[in-house]
Image 1 (cartoon, rainbow, N blue to C red):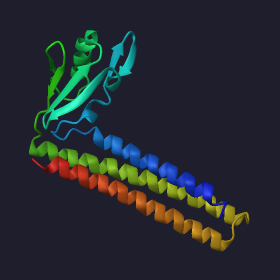
Image 2 (image 1 turned 135 degrees about the vertical axis):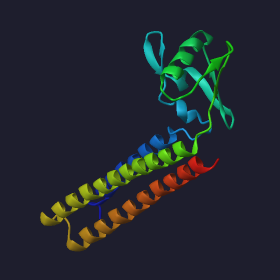
Image 3 (image 1 turned 90 degrees about the vertical axis):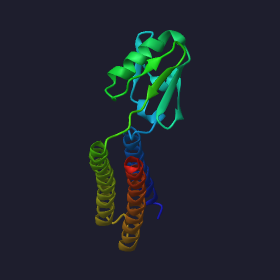
Image 4 (image 1 turned 135 degrees about the horizontal axis):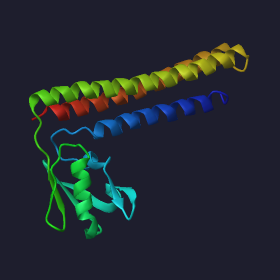
Length: 187
């Protein structure tokens, strides 16, 4: 069993990172609700080098449809505002010299359904990534059996463990989809 442990740990690590990637992709989809995750992709030039917005400011959702960005250094407030506008997020920030307020517009019904289709594609990509990890690990297990590094019993036990892990991770992605779809479709 010690020979298959590194393989199952590798599988779990790779599958977990596929789930996390999917979670991050879903978090960046605008739902008509204010979420600091909407601004994760925004980079601001700070003393000549690009820096993630969340390292330059506190981002909070004070209301369901309002994000507030409070820069640590007030001299970059105009740069932050400009970068949010140019980030192609469909947001229109305004600043009062101290903070930037970003109203989040409501989504149309048509746009909601387009986004649901899009998140289904993202989730399917995550499932495919998990299945590819399973395929890779199973191929390595078969190779070990062929080279007599594993007995048949150890090999079938390992295949079962990998399948259980695959099912668990696909279920996690399914839960992410369910939650995001519910969030998108509620008014």
